[in-house]
Length: 283
Image 1 (cartoon, rainbow, N blue to C red):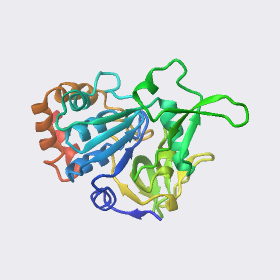
Image 2: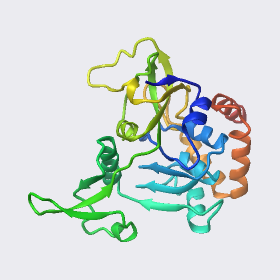
Image 3: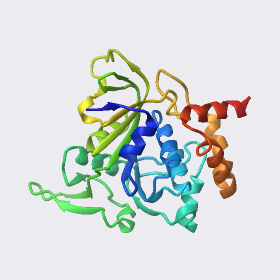
Image 4: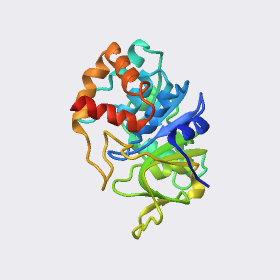
C-alpha cells in the first residue's frame, strides 16, 4: 500500500546508493522534481534506466550520481545532445559512465517482461542492425513452435521506478492521463515505486479505460505541483520550450553546469523553492 509522503522522505527511504532506478515519462509527466531530489540527497552509484534519457538524466549524470545508463535514445529533445552524458562517456567526467543501448521496442518489451515476472523479452527486431554488435545482452532464440529466430533481451526489473502523474486519491491510487509511455509497465516491474503527483484528491473520478495504478502496486505518493517541469502535464501546464533551449549552453560547460546545480538544486530546499528561484531569475 502506498504511503503519502514528502518527496524528500520518499527518496531518503526508498532510493539507496547502488540501486537500479528508472525515471519514466514520455513527452510529458517526466519526473524532474524527483531527479532534483536524488541530486540534492547525493545518491551514488546508480544504474539509470530510461527509454529516452533527456534533461533529468543529464542532471543525474553530471551531478555524479550514475555509474551506468541503460537506454534506447538520448538527447535534449528538439535541441541537440546531452552534453553531460557525452562528457561522461567520452571523457569520464565527473566519472566514467557505462552504457547499455537498446532500441525503443526492445526496452519497452523488457519492461513488460519485468512487470510480468519473466526473465527475458522476445521480439522481432534488429534485422540488419549493428546494435547487437555493441550490446552482447541482445541475443537470439528460436521459436519452439515455428523455428523462427527472434531477438531476446533481459527483462528490466528496477529496484525503484519513479514516475509523475496528474492526481492521486488519499488511499494512494494514481490516475495517469494523456500520452502513456511505459510508466505503467515500469511501475509494475519495480520492487519499489515512487509517484509524484500534481494534486491529491478525495475522488479520482477516473474515466472509463483510464490508466489507474492501484495503491497496492505503489510504495509512496508525493504531492509535488509542477513536478514534471520543464516537460508538460496534460491538463495542468504546457511544456517550457525555452528551458530546453537554455539548458544547452548550461550543460555544454562543466563550470556553468556545476554552478547551476549548486544554485538551483543543492542551493534549494525542495522543488517549490527551485521554481520560485527560477521564476525570480526570469523576472
